[in-house]
Image (cartoon, rainbow, N blue to C red; front, side):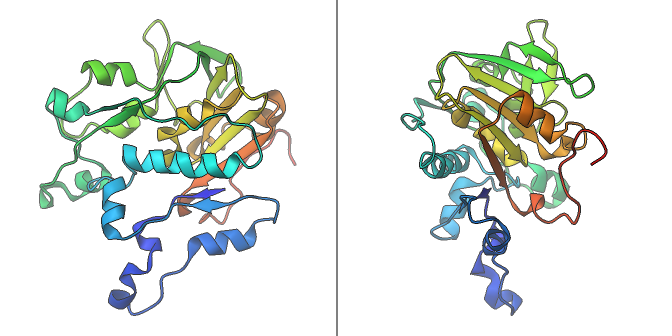
Length: 271
C-alpha cells in the first residue's frame, strides 16, 4: 500500500485550524494486516510540496510521480527481484517547447478568480520491449493497442494546446490502436507485458495519481494490469487476479480510496 500524502494531511495548518490534523496514513496502516507492506509520500516542507505538485491541479507533477515510483520501488524490491531502478533519460518540457500552459482542476474550478498556470513537462524513460492491450469491460476480452501514454505525440507537439485541456489525463491516461481509436484508463483496464520481466505479475489499482508512474513500475514485471478505481464496478477483481495470475497487488491512492463506506471491489457471481 502506498499513500499519496496531500497538503491537508500535513500538520502545517494546525495553528490556523486550532485542531490537530488527522494522520490518515497512520489510520490506514492500523487497519491493514501486518503482512501488507506500506509506505507514504513525505515532504520536507511546504516548498518541497510545491516542487512536486501542480499549483493549479490536484495531481502531482512529473517530479512527484517520479518520487512515488522510487518510494514504491524501494518498498516492493524488498520482496521481488526488480532489477535496477529506472532513471529518466530526458525531461521533455512540452509547454515551453510548444508554447502552451496547463490549467488544472483547481484553476478551472476557480475560473476568472484565478490567473495562474502551470508549466507541463514529463520524463522520458528507457522502457523494455513490451506488448500492450486494454480489457473490454463488457466482454472482458483483450484488445491490442499500439501505444500507451501519448509520449510521442507530446514530444512532437501533436497535441491540443487550448486552455482547459487536461494534459495530465490526456498524456498518461490514453491508449491508442493502429486505427487511431483511443481508450481512456477511466473506462478500460490497461495491460503491459514485457518480453523480459522478473517472472512475476503485478496489479496496480487506486486513483489517478498512479497513471503517471504506471509504466515505470510495469517495467520490472512480466505482466502488469492497471485498474483505475472509477471502473471497479465494471471489472471483477477476482477475474483479473485469476486470469493474469497476479503475484502482487499494489493499492496506491490518496485518501479517496480509503474514505468510502462501501467495499470498493466487485466480484463474479453473487458473493
